[in-house]
Amino acid sequence: MAQIIDGKAFAADVRQKVKKYVNRIKETHGITPGLAVVLVGEDPASQVYVRNKGKQTLEVGMNSFEHKLDKTCSEEVLLSLINDLNLDPNVHGILCQLPLPDHMNENLVINSISPEKDVEGFHISNGGLLSTGQSSMVPCTPLGCLLLLRNHLGDLTGKSAVVVGRSNIVGKPMASLLLKDSCTVTIAHSRTMNITEVCSKADILVAAVGRPEMIKGDWIKPGATVIDVGINRIPAPEKEENKTRIVGDVHFESCERVAGGITPVPGGVGPMTIACLLANTVTAFCREKGLEPPSEITV
Ligand code: GUN
Image 1 (cartoon, rainbow, N blue to C red):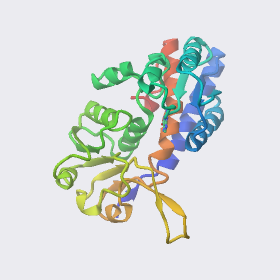
Image 2 (cartoon, rainbow, N blue to C red; image 1 turned 90 degrees about the horizontal axis):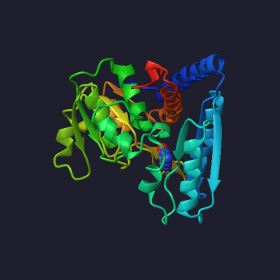
Image 3 (cartoon, helix red, strand yellow; image 1 turned 30 degrees about the vertical axis):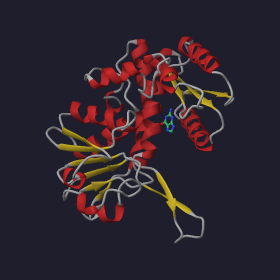
């Protein structure tokens, strides 16, 4: 049976390190790092995410600035707010919750965030820096996966890694990070032929396709490390009528019997995303002040 990779505990450990570092910054520089979160509209899932981000930002001792705009507000108003945050010396990180309303151009908005304050690493310039192996702000979820992998396996050099999923937010940056750590990397996706065979070669398998329980136990190389990024809500009639439950992109029960290590859903990658957002805010602060960011929470 695979060892369960406890992302919840590891994320708490990352937050603890961030908190310690934030305290040190406050003592030595008399400044409190700050994270601004922008939410446009009232999407219920986005409201939950934003609330959790704000709460955890305060818990590590940083300032949290929440900006809520009406879903009918113009793109110009949003761009003007982002411009103000770019110039605000109390704001070291900026996050704009997605999705944005249909009348807004998501790429334009994301690329209006100052790259140095882009703590989610979505700006085109951070994407370019990461893919060319240069220091950048790194997207939070792939960063969380990498920290879990390093913690579980140690040095990743020479390992065969398969990333299932090619999104700009997870799949592509994950592949860049694994390549930087000297893995042999394959990106597979919904159109990959013989995907079962491709996955069966992986020492490290990262699943980020958004298809509930797609990856089965007989796809997995015995002893492989399986990282499940998926968060899918599916019907759970076994619980009660109209009830749902959350599953990953990996069929946990069958994969757990074959893998060497596996992240559960929930409690695996999920909690790492916000922990890495906080870590990135500290990194952004350090870079602005010319300080060395703490090595255990940066790449
Ligand atoms: N919407 C859903 N997840 C995320 C996230 O991690 N960041 C942003 N900005 N928007 C999201």
